[in-house]
Length: 392
Ligand SMILES: Cc1cc2nc3c(=O)[nH]c(=O)nc-3n(C[C@H](O)[C@H](O)[C@H](O)COP(=O)(O)OP(=O)(O)OC[C@H]3O[C@@H](n4cnc5c(N)ncnc54)[C@H](O)[C@@H]3O)c2cc1C
Image (cartoon, rainbow, N blue to C red):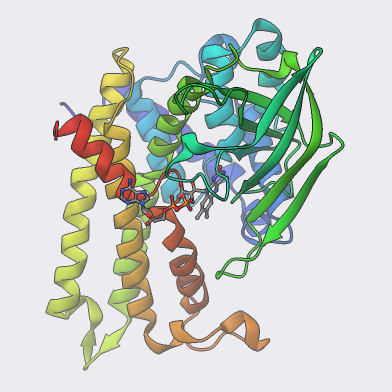
């Protein structure tokens, strides 16, 4: 694999840098990082991506994607992460869009894709239920056909951003007679439909990301079903592969590691920069090596996708390794902040104590614990790897 950039790629890299310098400005950055203004900030940022034609690089060009090569996608993502700009919120543009493009009707494509591209709709993912997480196929939320509508009853849990969402894509049970994977149907549901209730779930990082969503006789037109009734499991699995690829966040970890190195250089421990502490330096080197290995795995996966292969179990490997690396870096950042990372800074109502990165180190650490759970827990990714990669 030749990883050198040619002249065309270098010119593209320059264009990306220029766009990010102009568009990822202090104002939108501040709005995105403040929970109170996050939604508007993200919409503004996504609008800038849309106007540049870069909102959905992975979509086919006919629906508004770019025709970037694998290398260009890699360059864009590396630069985006280096500038600290976020990826577009994945539930619409990455997850449900991939299912609509692959399995949706022409009417569904015409109705939903332009609105996703322009961030007119926020989407959330209604897969997990109180009794169906890792064992997702055990889901019980029912959809009973009544004329040309499904009537939905049940509940979903851990639904990220349901409080903002205009639409939810849901797995529902339309048949309980056969294997549990059969009889699952994929529906698109307008969150304004009567009978839907959203309840917040507080998390340890102090933000409101998660919710429960309850369905009480919610009527959904049959035209909002993706593909065939009872075939939702097939569509759901293809979406999970996309989700896992996006969770690895290799480029973002590279940036986090560079920042960590700088912080450790400025932190004095026993009269010397922490970076020169042999124990700390070894931990840093270990995670750097792991990250390099994952980066090459990601490049191999991207190259095979570009050649027309379907991404498969490598998405599980990337999710597993990528999230373990994220968590190790978050732990090291806590260690650099030392005991200041142990205070609940936000709750003190006072100025930041100690290092100015202590508060974010702590919040990222707490939030980061979830990365080995969402998108399918890391234990489950090990099972998939054992079965499909190692043939055990
Ligand atoms: C921050 C966050 C955001 C999320 N966002 C969404 C969302 O937007 N939409 C959505 O639908 N879901 C979402 N989820 C849910 C997530 O997908 C599930 O939490 C996850 O699949 C695990 O399911 P569970 O919580 O029911 O745990 P369980 O399945 O009950 O697992 C409990 C423990 O048992 C282990 N385990 C279970 N089965 C096996 C097995 N076969 N082999 C080995 N170990 C096993 C698991 O690894 C875990 O450690 C989110 C979760 C989190 C934490």
